[in-house]
Image (cartoon, rainbow over all chains, first blue to last red; front, side, top):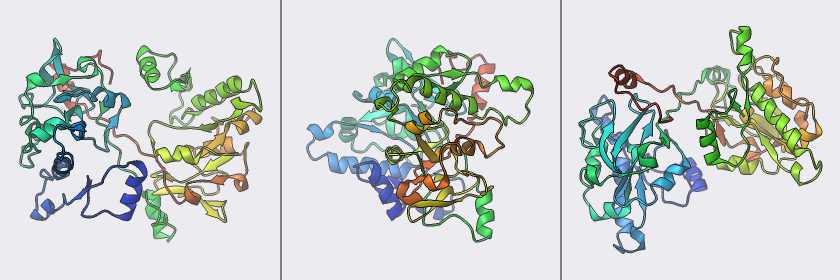
Length: 217
Length: 217
């Protein structure tokens, strides 16, 4: 689900080149017109809920059938994923969890596991949150999504409670399924890409020698 | 080829998990002891030359045979690659080239192509360099590497001339093979990862509650 009002040709070309899945768009920008100064509201809520809505509409037809097989993971273009992660989440019964590296001003955040069960969370911030787990740190079985038709992300949740707003309607801490060797391996990192420098581009553009605007970067 | 004096266990575990290829190490740090203040010298020269040396030693045995089939590309962990790029370079005869996004303070740098031939370069900096092409913007056939046993990167080349120092011994501009729709598509980006913040980690460590050092991040 992309942050845009309608699909541009470049976006469609680029995404169709890589996958065979539908690409949805959604207007996550309308909130800004209300003058919300701190961008607290959108932060991906509408896109993720649109993804859940699409799954419920298109995969519900044969409830209990093969179309219920699947795992829902909220990936993001600024994370770095080990392919092993996708193996780890493959047999999620309800909700599986694992550590996330370089998140929350920490080396990693992680569920704490004792005897194969999640008993708490290693996090540097508000450990009292119901599920102090980054968006990249859990996957949900499609079956659970379909059998809880009202569970979704709450755009009004306070900062840091977005993941909890979905998970508290789906699962208890006791039911979480630890992966990645009982949450001792980091297989996803919250990397962020540096803002690119454009100094020479601007200088060349001032001379009419800038890059071809028809080339998509 | 990794920047380290010897393989650590963590490095070996992690690389063996993903690939079936040899992992070489090389001491790129010894230059620093000379007191070179601006890190001009190493910048990956020794690692890349070690890769070339390994190829010449191990793939030369049956010159002209199947072991000469292959393409040499100098990838880097701070770039982002479209998988399509690896298709584009697949049938390189000598040296294939393409645009690189977000490099050199530009939207992109690229060979300029007329009639299927490279006739110049779009770059914001020293366009007079023999090959003003980023390391991510070209691939070389293994055959060419093996048939030019002395071609390598020159660690004494001035900044910006490292790619030229290899390429000028292998190919002329006229022989470059443009890829990516005659160099109109960007399939690799020189992204750089932000330095991670560690504020809460440091605060927790001060309280003796830091992350488990046994967990590799």
